[in-house]
Image 1 (cartoon, rainbow, N blue to C red):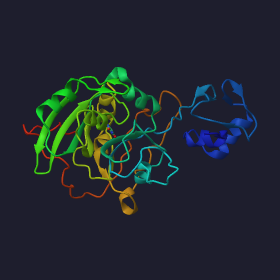
Image 2 (cartoon, protein in one colour; image 1 turned 180 degrees about the vertical axis):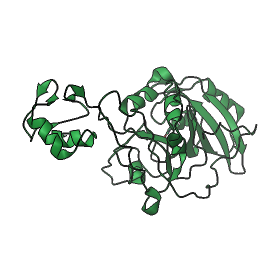
Image 3 (cartoon, rainbow, N blue to C red; image 1 turned 90 degrees about the horizontal axis):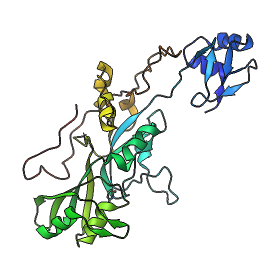
Image 4 (spheres, rainbow, N blue to C red; image 1 turned 90 degrees about the vertical axis):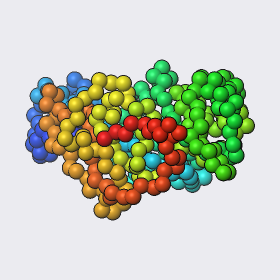
Length: 309
Ligand code: URA
């Protein structure tokens, strides 16, 4: 975003707005190598290189990484011509604009990641990384072994065969069965189409895991910030040692009112060399609450995906 130079310099913690104007007037500030002496000059700190007395400002936007338990009836697009509810409606108090990592259908529930770090999101979504996504699916009636086997081996869809998947029965009920489907592709409506291909009718679909991250006990419609370690692990980056601050990042957030007390940003000494790390998990405090009854109970073997702190 374009902003006045003096605002950028003072926001970077170098000096006050007034003193920043002096720096500009004295020819001590340059943008992309060109000295700027006009007070009205604007620059975009996310793309322009701004230097003060030859030192480059590091004014990177705070990176946010969010895990939301998406309810059914929300779309993952950022706007909708039909006026349907958007997942970002659930994040009103998040201070920066964030974008969903991939998509979930309007009626799909569960784990959705959102971030303003495009590089991280692209890394996660790149097919090369084959990140596993696990879904619990409630299907009408009874499944038979052959249906699970076919889904596991790969089924023919209109956009080609699906890659092998891990498919198993989780629970058998009177009216419905629950199955778990783990895939690493990210095709549109893939799980629903895989089910259709073996004549299974989907009643409910919920993503419960994305790579190393499990949905855990976060309630429907609530979100939490990822820890630094989770952010790094998920993208297959070297794991950073968490700070005390980032360890608190797993707190659940409810929408609105008192729940959203924001911890003030650390003051930045933004001249390069002293800048804070670009990956920064903001922390917020949320209202602790009762867990909602889980959509699918434990697996037959009693196995649960490992919980993150
Ligand atoms: N597969 C689907 O069919 N729908 C989703 O939302 C996600 C995976």
